[in-house]
Image (tube, rainbow, N blue to C red):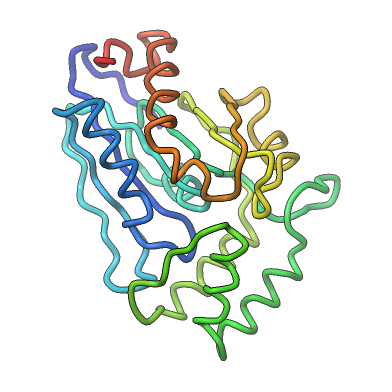
Amino acid sequence: MSAALRADAPLGFVLHPGWGFAADALAPWAGALARRWPEAPVLAWERPYFGAAARPRPADEVRWIGIGHSFGHALLRQAELPWQGLVALHGFSRFCRRPQQPQGTPPRLLDAMRARLQAEPQGVLADFHRLCGSERQPPGLPDVAALDEDLLALRELDLAPATVPLLALASRDDAVVPAALSEACFAGRAELRWRDGDHCAWLRAADEGVAQLADWLAGLPSRDSACGAPR
């Protein structure tokens, strides 16, 4: 949902990592946002994969933009907040294949991940991070129940089109969210922009991504967006 706020209301950002990642995965984006908009609050949300969940409450009278990587985008879309806009970094509205929707991951692969997760959670995470192109190490022992809960959510995910402006930053070389799935989820429903690289390409290219975000915000109609944000 979105809310009408004054055009001069301050801009703010909520960051959410994807499945199997901790909040520090978006630290490059937090830094790039702070350089571009020094006065804007930046909040970090995360699921309890490696410790307690974090979800600091966004202040009222701020034009909040939700920036989510991978499954983090879907989680932000489902949050009951008056978003002024959303940014998907290698995100999606549906992850698995469906009848008449051949793009995406076969559900049986998530079923296999869930089964292996019970015995080898660290091995599942290590293999997934390699597939993503990430060299990050998990920051602690994983919470198997939280990871399993969200694998099931990923399997069943099929979101309605977003009702707020949406910028989708995708990669044509992404092994987790193939280009065909990005197009199926976002073409004609969002501003879809591309770069080369893997499932973490836009995480690493934070300054480029924030430049894309600033350009996108500047082009939005003032009635829908955070227009008037400093560039």
